[in-house]
Length: 369
Image 1: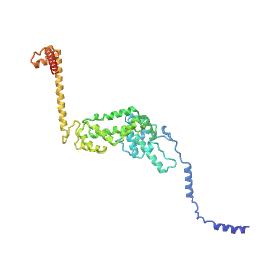
Image 2 (image 1 turned 90 degrees about the vertical axis):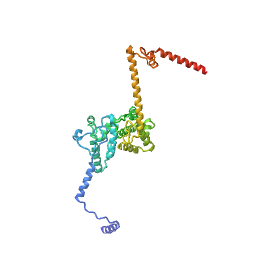
Image 3 (image 1 turned 60 degrees about the vertical axis):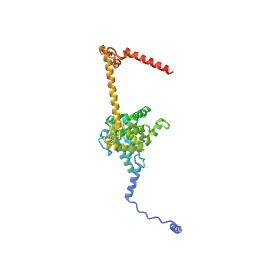
Image 4 (image 1 turned 45 degrees about the vertical axis):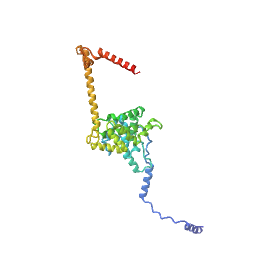
């Protein structure tokens, strides 16, 4: 039995493919496998997202006052500080720009968290972005707001809280911003440079654009947003806000059909080279507006002279009314009659002459008829 089975098994093994030689498993390999199995089984699972509730602390959390002593790698000297609803729109726009630059928008604004399958490098990057954003936010809010956000422990929770608290999206605020933008020209005076005025113009423009970001399709805010996204409209609005103060310059630049960026560069260049007229219309270099200045001076002189005459006449009439001895009639004085003791409003000669003149005019009309 065994002799018959032996050849059969040997023939069967000859037909089977040869197995590669197996090396004995070392103790180090067994340790690695054990480590992998243990870490996969005991890997911490992230808690379910709760964006509005503060994160529960497992250990003693670092207080916000201590965190504020740290310095972010982002330079914050030129960033505006959040004071409340009055500047939230501009503050949020600048922060979105910063978050885009440091690749933190998804984490801070949308609350992104890496999945369980994320690598250690991805987890470390997310932790770095979260810490960097948190340290940045707490340095650009006022002390009063700092007290309000102290219970939150993530940049996303703070961002949501600030938006819910200070963002105002009402039709009244939008209309108010439109009015402030349309009257921007009246804010320009002789003490303000053209570059400062352009900065104010762009801030107002960006604020309107922000207020129309969530406009419903077909609404008047949506139509206004379409206008705000046109480069041509931005250029024309800037020129219109300057035409009252820089008439000749605006007329010249309008003919050149410049883009908004080129227009801005041209205006600032003219100001730097002292080729831009001042607020009152004069020019520091070539007196291009000499005729306009002379005309303005003549008009001002005529207005002052008329004002002085009216003031003197009013003073004379008032004095004659108060002091009877000073009552004089300008009509009688002009025609050589006795003019003291009465005024032209009560002059009988003036009334008689007016009636005679009217009668002669009536007779002449009948004659021609």
